[in-house]
Length: 140
Image (cartoon, rainbow, N blue to C red; front, side, top):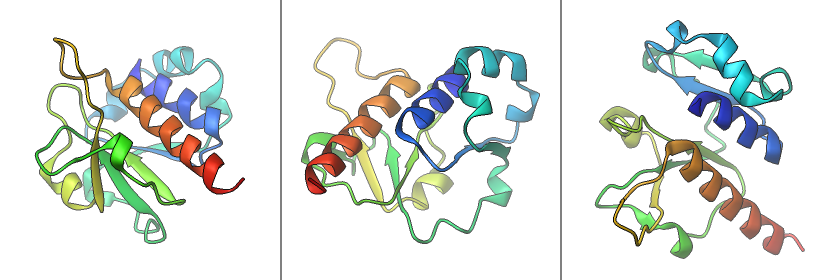
């Protein structure tokens, strides 16, 4: 479900591409991804790749990990650059240390309630639309 929701969020803002980095995601049932994407899977460029074959064409982008790690910055205090890649991790294990080391920035979403984290697709939506809000203000 999160992969489908991620594709839908990416299509909402006109993202160039979605890359799922996983050594086991190839086993996921594409029909479930397509169903939860509500048509976005056919409208956006996306792929599943392994951690061993990360795309190298991301040099022009700032990679921003959405992660609750000690050195993360509060999303509402962070000034987003224009060209970004959002990195979200597995809900149980988070983002691997290797992938976190590839990011230029780490941000977290402050959660005041008794549950201290969001579903990854919800966290992505918050981050993407905060980026969008900042870009809209910046280019007015």
